[in-house]
Amino acid sequence: MSESSSSFRNFAARLLDYEGVLVEHIEPEGLELLAPAPVAKVLHISELARLGFAAELPANAERVGLESDWLERFGHLLGARGQTARVVLPIALPPLTNAERVVEHTVNLQNAVYRVVGVTPAWTRYLIMLFRVTAFSDEKRDGVIKLGFNLVNGSTLDAIVDELLSSAIETAGMKKSPPMPASLPPGWSPVQLKSRVARALPERVESHLAPFLKGMQRRLDRDLRRVHGYFDDLRAESLLRLQKQLAAEKETARERLRLEAIAREYKAKVADLQQKYALRVDVAWSQTLEVVTPVQRVEVLIKRRKGERRIRLDWNPLARKLDVPPCEYSYTQSPVRLVCDDKLHLIRPAAHAPCASCDKAYCRACHPLQCPKCHRKEGATPAIQFGED
Ligand SMILES: [Zn+2]
Ligand SMILES: [Zn+2]
Image (cartoon, rainbow, N blue to C red; front, side, top):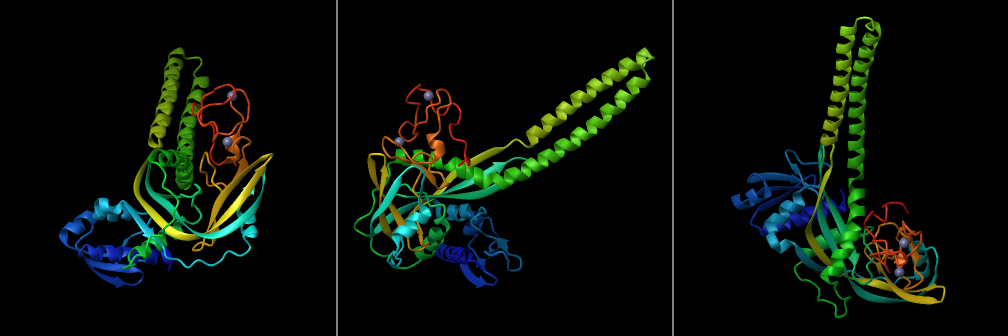
């Protein structure tokens, strides 16, 4: 039984109990509910229902998981109350011994040197946003993407977001919440947040949908092969007849028309398939959770040519992991970074790629809108192909 399915069950049990549902725990990892009619209606369940949270379901239970539409159903139950929340996680903070080694394991700078300057206990704010992704094609696929940032430095939380989320869900139910710490990193402006989310999200949507797209491509290839095989046979037969009938002119003309019709029909079938497999993807924000938690803050001095810059990376005691330095342009999940000459931005190699028209390599964090040399605009064609570094 996974920890997250059990904490999700506890969260659901508390929420339902709060909404006046009679809740009983059943095994394996399930709940039996007797719900007031209005609640049952919002949740799309009958008034007497069973829910299962693990791979193995209790008899007659409906499956509930983070990847199903149940987050949305619970969201409807909460209404606007559930869309943003803040949780303070009172985790014990062990000392971080051997910070140099931890940094060495996590930080991958290709063109700069660094050293650890210090380690101090601190508090940070993580922002975790849930996005519902729906892909429509010949099949429909629903899912949830969890995108998280550390507000102190912009690091993305892909490696620790599940752990943060499940322990936040667990803590949210505790009666007394610990006091807010005095010193916290400031929030981001809506513009800042929006631009970072806009850059971070496409890559994650793409990797989330990759298995679905692969399956779809396989089905499309199979159907194209089948259609092609069928029409190829028809064409071959027709050509054969044409060769035999070359003498009789009238027959030949008819066969030629038949060949044209076969070609037309083949094109139409392929167009049908294209439509059948056309992909539409909807991405909608559903919830934001702020997690406030103690961390060990590691200060790192980066040196590139004559420049120096101090960055802060937080070590999270829950996941026992250090922040990966953010790509300050793309907020990618991939870990390799370059340091730019002018402002010592941390960027992925693709964000320092040569300009497509004048070939000058430049930092997209310094110049997000256009090439500094030839002024070619970014975004006409995507400057960054995701997943290349
Ligand atoms: Zn250029
Ligand atoms: Zn730069």
